[in-house]
Amino acid sequence: MQTTIHPISGEELMAYFDGELPPARAMAVHEHLETCRECRNVAADLDAVSRQLSEWQVEAIRPELKLPEHIKRRRP
Ligand SMILES: [Zn+2]
Image (cartoon, rainbow, N blue to C red; front, side, top):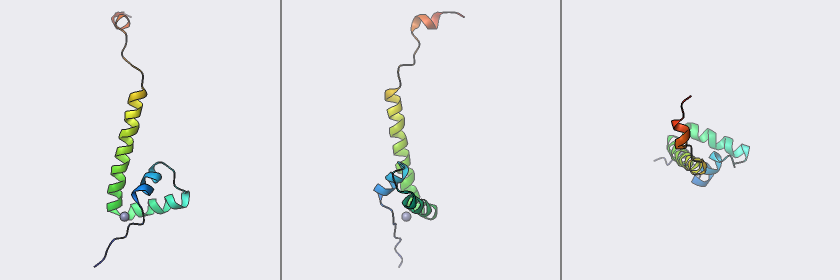
């Protein structure tokens, strides 16, 4: 019986997406992701979460974009 060994931890995957891994390590992660569907799934989840987080942050920082009433009513 063969057990798949994943040389990458969740923390390392997160560091990989944050660009915080040293290049050699990032390369190893990248190569493992290309061959391992399971870690790719984990990676996709992490990626989606961090994307949601950054979108949420952008949303929170973005100033109110609604035009004031008097400008909306003005005709060109
Ligand atoms: Zn794996």
